[in-house]
Image (cartoon, rainbow, N blue to C red; front, side, top):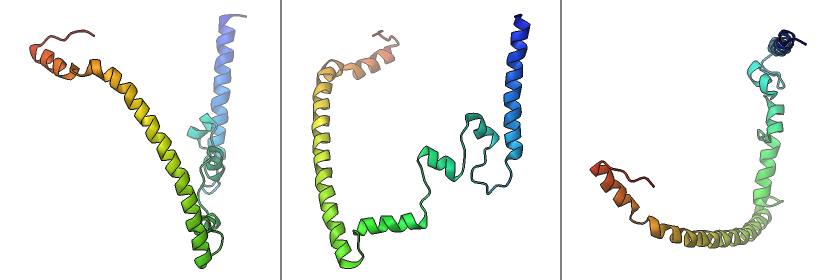
Length: 141
């Protein structure tokens, strides 16, 4: 097979692809269609609208979901009892968060210890760099 034939077939494939995208652009239709594919997005094969959002894992909150979240924050039931349940849950979560914060603090402390060792030989470097810059000679590190 000649190089020319190969090149021509490649160009053909590319043009076919382009045509399919152009067709998608033409089929786009009404702006309210949630699954429509725009030319720009079509190239990456992503969809926009509700479906695309769902595929990417981000969602628009609907009324029912908002209500659901409010209930969860208050506890399952409304009124005083719900508030009490919500507070109990907050306390529980607070304890968990406290533990998380503790472990985080410990990790940061360990990291700082490790950094201190490296900082010892870096300590005077900024002053030296500034002085060298003023004298117009930089030492290569």
